[in-house]
Image (cartoon, rainbow, N blue to C red; front, side, top):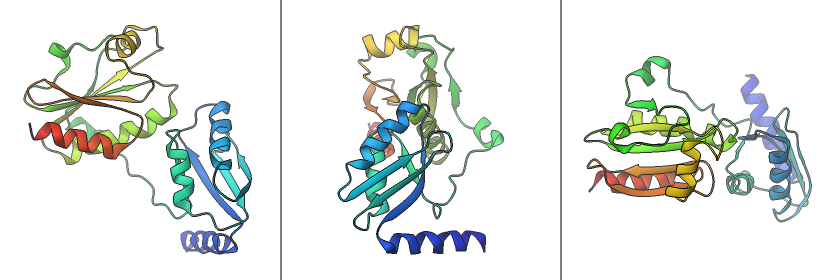
Length: 214
């Protein structure tokens, strides 16, 4: 009943055409909130934006009805996600489910060693991430579900303490990564299939499917 009331309240607000309220996932600092605010202000007809970093709550006022998909698209460019009251909660793998999958972390701060880290006979995803990278925390669970739902797929998470660490230097110098999250995919024969920068899970999914067909 409470969930229904929230949905009805949101729908009534949206019909008024002047305000949307939602949460912003993926922010890790006050500057993230500033970036989100600037991105949302660029939506046509928006007159005021408030993004609170501590609570992750956001509000958009506009002269017209702003569709939720417009908000999602604006934040997606930054690697953030808009979550509305009616959105279902994203499920997470349980520790037991995760333990049954071919998912493991490479040695912390160490560079990737393909001979050590590739999963023989499987397509392997390397997920470069950092604790201070908010969008990384959104992407990794999605990659874990991809491994759960796809046969012959492995995931290796590569943590960067900073850009000067061995894994950071390898990412920027050898792999030419420009930002995090950064994903590299190798086919079942260990050959590089391609890379994706950012949180676009559909691009990553397409790359994985291409690697599986090789």
